[in-house]
Length: 191
Image (cartoon, rainbow, N blue to C red; front, side):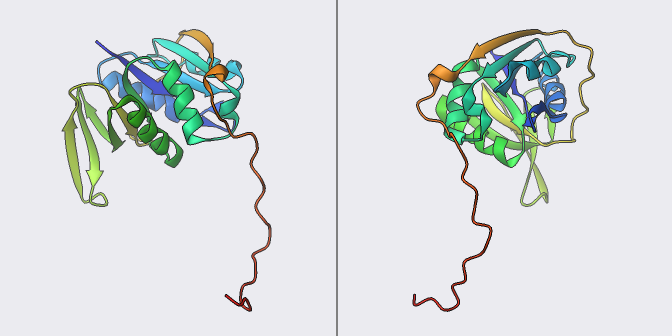
């Protein structure tokens, strides 16, 4: 049997509450997940260790996680995550990352899941006017909508392993340049 992996949602240097909802979603699939925390400081993974229902927490520590770069994040997380079904939040950044991880691992991707019943995943289609249910027959990458599942309670005491993924990076974003504060007036431009 393959593992179920939850990629923790990080917001402003801390673990977002959506991560505990992902643990509940993994439980609906029938397993206690491994939670992977992408971070630059491994101490933030301690918050994920207190989520009840997580079997293990892996702090994927790398400077690549300082700024979002889809290719860098996908490479670093792919190197750390074991084989299995990967669950992540349905945020714009995580949905982009889900598609990249699915492509790297040659897996199916199911976006915006709102209900789980074992291996049956339900997600909206046609702007929410209809629902589709798909059956997983193997590992996949799944994005879960926020506020659909109840948050897993705290009080867990999972083991935390720190894995340095810095050596796995070929390229990484070092700095974001500030955008010009003024709009360029092109009203009298020749072209």
